[in-house]
Length: 177
Image 1: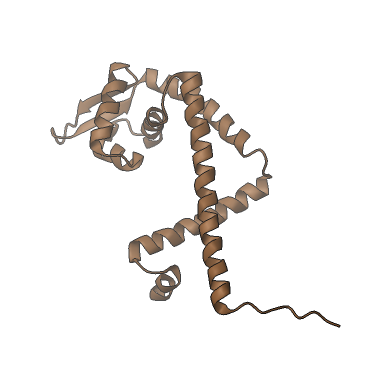
Image 2: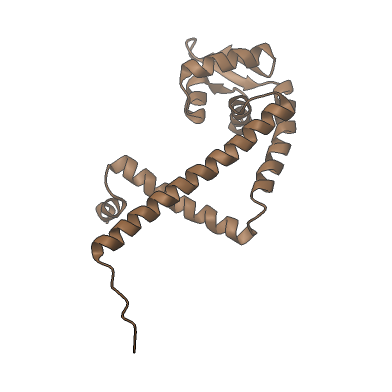
């Protein structure tokens, strides 16, 4: 006697798909929060600094520009308002980790650059930061990290497509054909 396996309705499969997407989003959010909390705590405990300060130094370093970055560019890269950035910049200038100057081409624009002291501080923190991140990913094999990176890249593209077009990813894909 064979057992009959019930066939799920289209609606039930759609609900399961919807739940899977929500569960995945919640898991991604939880992982992000756990990693960020760990990094914030270690920066505070080991260096007496904050994640926004570290991020600003890292962005200035990554810019690889002798002239520095404008406050507007820093604001976009850090995804913060100019108001939040102004206070942070003032504190880092007082500590001589960054310098601020007026742009020679537009006196309304301020340029921010990493000082030698800021570069040294960042190098020390960045080395530990890399170790912290690696330790949190130690439970994954290198091929799993690569696959996860690839899949999250696809997800990023899907999210950006929906954000730009205001359409479902499939609809956005159809519109590009």
